Length: 198
Length: 269
Image (cartoon, rainbow over all chains, first blue to last red; front, top):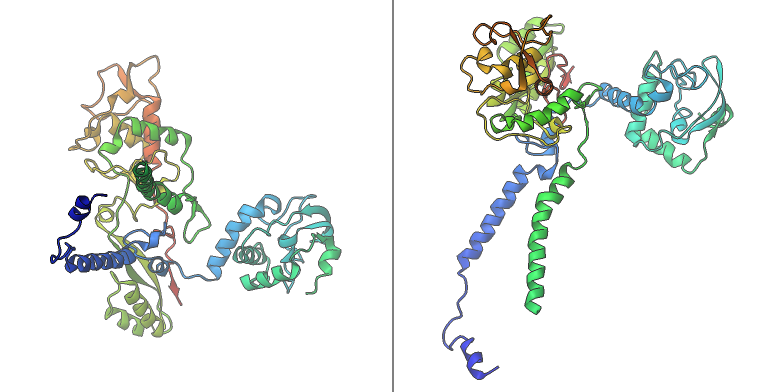
């Protein structure tokens, strides 16, 4: 580079180099701050379920029906109809000669759910006596893919419907059971069920 | 070529940024949108439209209905009404209490406080969630439109100009027969309507040995000449079926409201 060019790009000595005034930076920061606050208050954090006039998922949740036994049963019914009803029937009566009923089943109505809760998690195959009849068929681990809460809800629904009268199953029970039986093979019929400690 | 590479990088960055905003963002937000659970029910929403209505969507599109009609309901806010459901053992005390309280148009916090007071006096109450806004007070809908409402529509035709009324819930307001009459002769049903007639969706034919069972029963002055009848084409039937299928009338998680049949959005016992 020649000296001329070098000199022309330099500021003559004694003069300040041109810089943007401080207030522009201050204003930019202020605008960014205001934008940030507006974003926080009105975006709903890009939650697809939050629409105006609701401003956050918390606010939306506060307008929802209070969760309770009724909500759990509805949730369980939905899961049951999607996962279980094709074999055990929407009325819980099963299919004669193929799939045992859940309505009036002594396994479902047992005072402890320690045995019945493992059936959807592990699956079961072999001979089993249900509601006065002998059955011999196979069930895949249909419930293994459900979340703790969904499996608990569907078990609660089964134990509360069609004249059944069992206690409620909580998501924490399912979590404990899953930790216990992880890696186990499918239950082998009635003998396998009876081997589980109630 | 150093500059060329920089320009390439800059262009890539700018285009990539807008791609993220216009494509990636919406897909992340709504790409997995599916049917949703209806509140206080084991139903899911929305069900796929009937076949004729699905074809009708394309007739709606072809005739540019979205140029004059929107299919989206706005909502300004939501208020709570506290409704007494049981007077308890001391009805006089509860009745005294509620006569001194404001029970409608409350915020959620106020409603909770009122329910608490009623519970303390021995009564039972329910909190009703009531969406409010100009569209809702016009009777055009019960709640704001949400993404689920358009799950089966391709393309989604929200519309942006309201020359005519919003159609998001038109299926709740008018039956199929009305839609056909209104499409053929809008002014026969709504006197001052500025909607153009869509007569080309209908056939005017000579009445044969037996009159067609589908012929429109038009009022005096709008009918065809004597000896002729007006019969809807398949397009008209599909379009009417689509219009009748437009009803967003269920309460969802993202658009909660208290329906008349299932008024339990938080029971205080």
